Length: 518
Ligand code: AMP
Image: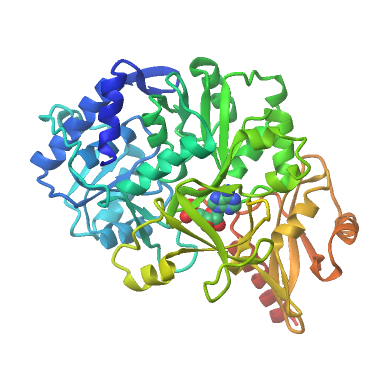
């Protein structure tokens, strides 16, 4: 089955259900969404003459057209290349060229960036602005049904990784990967029923876009907020209109929602589930979120190479405060999902025992098919039949997985491993601390030493001495930060992940300044 088929199914079973809403307004039914995507497929196939398997980019902010363009691409047997709206034109140019993209859909705010990038990419022949008359004309093209235009093993989505190290790589996601991931959502994470809705407050080119599919299968409504992004008050207003509203949020978004000054006075009854993921959420943050939002949290752990589907934790586990291991569980990334095997391996790819620390590996239906035109990286990531995630973790004897840190964030001081997350969990217990991130700084004698970056709560002023006293009570001496830096905010990526690399760069700059002065 191709992913295009799930839209046909929804249009057959629930033709009049609302498929797309823009803010509070219902926009298209499932029957209309199907017709619009089939016209786009006709445009791509018969007007632009694209052949099966060609790549089509979406350089779009969250917009109501996102979903119909994606299904149009698949109904024409093509491959979608969604791109983050906040990328630099040079990064866009690289991805367009590397993927061999021939056509791109763009929202007006990004047309400039794409034109700038596109000029240097000779293969890019068509750029279609979704607000233009060309797009309205495309919607009048003769429909191409295309429900069988692709096979389950065909490439569906080229998912460019964030590229924190080196050039971004295009993870090849197949139709089968997306279908398996969607089925697993129902099995492991949450129910979805007609009348439910999913709000896209995070980028649809990434995390939030993946939630389209289980919600089409569940005959729910996709809501694109008028702001196009994350606005806590808008979310709660929309939850009043649409009811049973779910959303995907990076931990930093959950943090902003929970700490919104008006949150205590607002009606949360229309909010069904907030699924968080993409970065770890520290235990104290999870507890605060549960206190403020009620038992509405669920979690997913995945990566571009196994989208949304390695482990997860459903809402009932967060609600189960009587469980003697509740704190350990809500601090974990949950249980392996139904469609994958998950194991913690040593450096020689031997599975470790429960409680032993190693690299998290996964295999199964949601694991990608390799990197686009990069055999070396594909072979390394998929060696011995397992996806090597680069994440370090521990599988508990009770079967849940706790993520420690990316291996490159590990601090080694005097030959001992220090997992930043362990120190971060302690510092966040201080009531004046809003956010914290711990990194290593090169040290002549010890190799590395621990430095903590701290963001204070508004109106508070935690001191290094207080924080050190807290650490003295909770962690081994060698893990205690040797220096504290207080910042107004932590540097974050456009997906809301803390950029530890930038924190390390800040420390390196300090060191080179000091060396220059001495
Ligand atoms: P990306 O490929 O950009 O989606 O990033 C995936 C990475 O985000 C993973 O390899 C993890 O390091 C991190 N991540 C994703 N989900 C979680 C989670 N639930 N808890 C902790 N880290 C996560």
